[in-house]
Image (tube, rainbow, N blue to C red; front, side, top):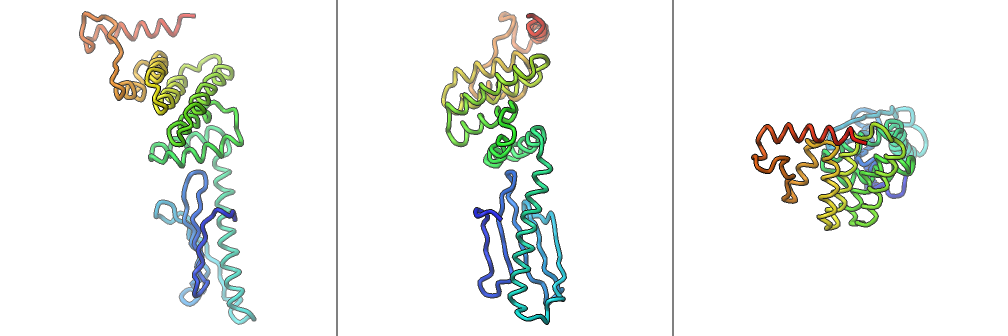
Length: 253
């Protein structure tokens, strides 16, 4: 068990161990206790978000009448507790063994507003996949926002775009909006509003209807100019002409 895992042992009976462990950005509570009197069991429960996600029982009747019964019980409780934590780590590693699986988990954490958990997971993922552009893009963005490493965050997002262009020279348009969204947010965190707007607008050149990019532009207080200034922005002609121009721009060399 790692040193940073928070462990508390009941000081009177020493028959309960509680650990708080962060694995892949998720905080688990592991509780192992001696339920011998009631059920003749040692039970370990794993909690996530206040809910039990796993339970393990060990029958301890076979050591009841053995010498040093109390000592053996404490050893068995600790042994099971540490084994459950190690098993949990191994299972979590198997589930997040590819860049895409890591990325899915990161997106889930971001949707839950757990930015710090997402950054922790990305840090772990990049040790295995240091040149994955998708992981780097999100990592750079969160480094700027959370840790205020502005220059490093922007550089990392920019490098992610360079790697994307190298690895996926064709068909990358579908990914570019997200990459420029992350770059723009990194710029915005550093107070460089003009650079942020340029990044968001570049992203919109790949997907003119991207909601996240449009929302960022709206928050800044800027809107794209209508294609035909003499007509209102909401006019269907402006909308469809804009779509045609965008399609032609993407097809042009």
